[in-house]
Image (tube, rainbow, N blue to C red; front, side, top):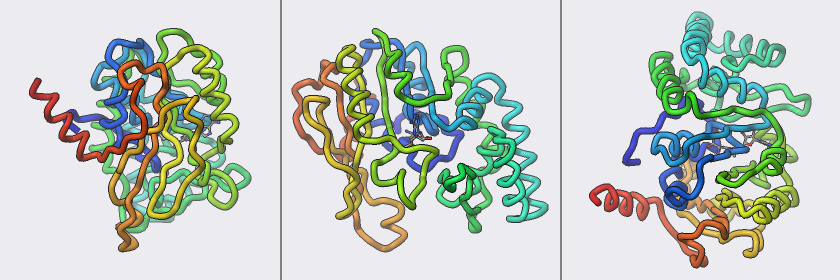
Length: 306
Ligand SMILES: C[S@@+](CC[C@H](N)C(=O)[O-])C[C@H]1O[C@@H](n2cnc3c(N)ncnc32)[C@H](O)[C@@H]1O
């Protein structure tokens, strides 16, 4: 990336690496507010706010403690940094054992900063819940989690770009879609169809294809532009069926080798699919095109000389 973007919450599924590519589809000066209803680590909001693309931002998610964490980052990053540091040091005195203690406490008190600590310390930075809604991901035994000094820098850097212009809201994505108004731009990143039901209970809740289609239909009826991250594939594994072209235009991004494939010694290439709203004027005549992240890096280095 040509600019440095804060990213305080380590989160599996973060769109941090794709932010430059995704931002290149957001037209300048079309909309005033970015709404991210499946925010997670809010990589796209943070990148857009760093670039001052919108004048205000909405970060929303169904995971209550995560939204609490965003509210604290926006309003009081010092408390988050202090509490994170004491949790992290607590585990230095009792490695691994303290992780399990903090996890058990989180499952009772749902403390936002304990969630940050667990995300920073757990395997693959991945939220995982059991059927009773308890966080059950194991600690990563090879790493210690983000150092508190670095975490403090990241928290304050995120605070600086978000404070005074960002709202964090807890709830189901559909309520935001229904409340969408002129001037809004939506970036939607629902859980993959293949990873939220059955045994792989990645996120707090799943989102059906039907509800995704319903949301896009509402946004289209209201002429609200959006970008949706959806499906994707890794090697010969596909996640989900494509959506109809009448809803939005599909663009495929070649993201390169996945970390998992690299670890397993395979050469699988990950393809991310974006759906670009018909209400984004600049690219309305794009059909199916393929891009690699290298293309974006090249394009952006050209732009930065203009
Ligand atoms: C793929 S992740 C988003 C990752 C994000 N783009 C980032 O950069 O970190 C999907 C998010 O949707 C949230 N989620 C799941 N079901 C939801 C729902 N019904 N409404 C709102 N958020 C939901 C999950 O808690 C999770 O944080």
